[in-house]
Image (cartoon, rainbow, N blue to C red):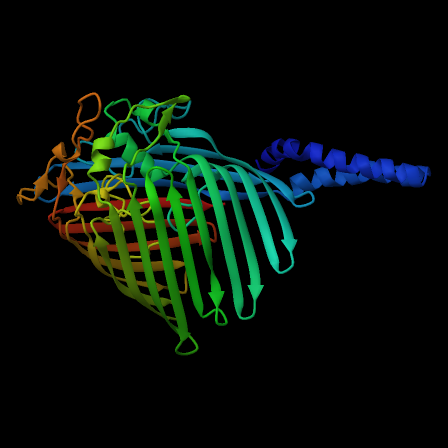
Length: 501
């Protein structure tokens, strides 16, 4: 597999290598017409092409998941789902600092079953997955880009151009994608190092953002919704690193989404101190903010054409200035770790990220991104985009690793505030807090933009024990069983087999 992909990538760099060796060959002939000297050029060309293949690297992951969900109030109201995903990227060897990367992405199934969900159609025979009208089902090329690496003084620099994953603490580094360029540089300094980042994307879409847009489109044709992208230019600038003999880590990112978000901001600082030979204490502080444009509009496209303004009414009534903060302390003693913290919000909303989670470190496995995969979490188009929304999460998590490759843990979180959490059929809410989809208004065709119902002041506990066994370094099996109690109450399990390339 590795060699097949690498040979394909080698074609992209062949002309560079050929032109280089041809030039060297001509110069050598001019200097000395000896047969031995002339024969060196073909050998060099052969070695460089060989390096493209033999020095290629494979990265990515694959997993198979099985979910169950059961309601407490509705006996027999349950659901199941299967989910499969493979992300495989191959990077060629380098010639004079140039390389190329191409990747495949396969996805089938959902991580968010509800009442009536079942796995009867999870397998469609020996020909593989039939892509019908399921938004999450995909099989295509994901990344494809060229890179150049070089050193300038104390800086090590890499520039990428093409179709690239959006890598930042505001996004999901594995699946958010854009067309543009990315520049990263690293500088070594006394007591640590500093990293710099700049990126620009002309066309892009986040995985979580894609689900948000799909839900808000008036059409029920999920196949068409899956083809929608965003044309608002996305710009990101970042700086981070470790200093003070690597005791202090920091990360700061700022961004702009033209015509939609005037600015996005993410900042974090983490200070660690040793309390003994096997004991370490770290303090983490994180914040993120976003400001909506005065006349916000998303330039959406499908099949090379613009889409009508489908939810400008909602954007005009959305939270203008959103902010959140997270404070955490973590103690690690040998194979045991314990962390506790508090996530809060400020402004008139809490949706500040491209992704539902990004780099924000909390506890809990379900409340943040695993209810509907659309609204819950910290995403800029999720529940935190509603005007006067807020969120508070007090959390604690513990984990212990045995001498064998086995870890057990427990996450506990209490979520409260004007969270506007989505309501599930498996957990109907009769508290009087429910808000229907009239909040969204309608689009230009007069149709309601969303069908989801929400719980305005949803507060609930999540208690999730989990266990992970590593067969070897790259292959692991995990299981979690989450209990949610309060305005949202159900029992959910996830079994996962994961391989990391």
